[in-house]
Image (cartoon, rainbow, N blue to C red; front, side, top):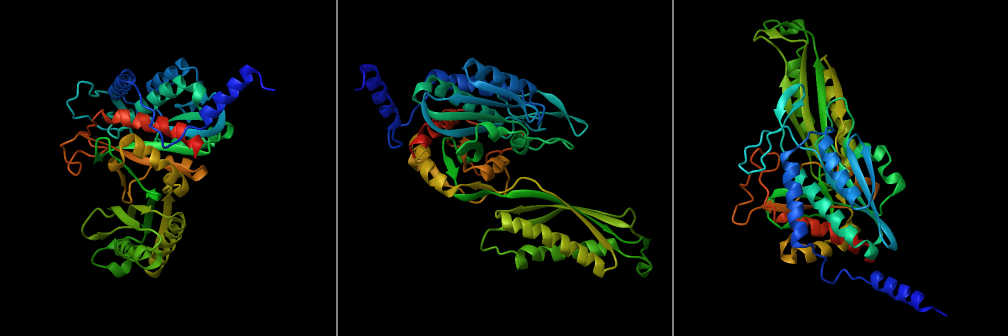
Length: 428
């Protein structure tokens, strides 16, 4: 026979376990919203470059510790992970925000404008949160505070991931999501699902865009060194012309996407951005250097493009009596939203933002290292608009611009999306 206390515990557990994702979303107070804005402004005014987020890491870790979370610092150099164990049994979910800023001199006139200076590639540069990572961190800090206040109601565990170096680690260093995973991020608290938000100027403030399946492209850099034999321009037969050969390689590699890749699966792009060779009009040089980018939305196609690029360059060079040395620097994989997770959790986003403000995104040829998490476990990544009402998102300064501006009313929406994802997932 149940005692009165055990009956109360059972009733309480049943009440907590029957939270429906159809009910009204959990919101944050105006006081917490203002605190999120203040965090954002502080982080914006003190930006730090990839793998150098020392002050940022300290601000975040101190906040998470003040909430009573189990906090790990120093992962992937400056990453911070906070773990909140709920009062009810349930799944582990992860929420992620990125921390690093960009080598950009800010040109906005906000009172919390960044005047930070740092070093990038051996040069002194201005530093700015021109991609909105300051908003991401502030929203997740707010979500951690709200969820901590609801600890007894939470089913399962929430892992807060504050990740450095999303914009890419400095040359010669590892970093970002890939290094966090390599250093055991998911070993102790492996989530069933991981969620992320990225603010963007392409949407009005408070609007959200998502896409089921591939959302953002893989991004890979390639280098091709074409080696010929130097000769006088008046006697091309006296050597091997790497310039002509490089031109043939550029032309032939365009058939990789147009003739060899199954583009009914997903689009792809192979683009050259650098062509360097020669010092004088009448000297055919020894070599030409080519560099470019590969963007693609299918991991199998990606592997095929790598192989075809190498073979096309090498065989084209061989046919001309030259040599082609190809190096592919693999960047971020395709960012893929798990279809089942997306279908189940987008209703949460619609309840928070308003169904009329949630849209399907086109494929985006930019890249994101959230992709590494989403290859490990089911992931959902969405875009949150920050362009003020009345301003045209199509002409607003884009992410990475020195004029990038974010309407801070988006912070409340993003914070509440994080909170409700964590609460609703357990009731799928």
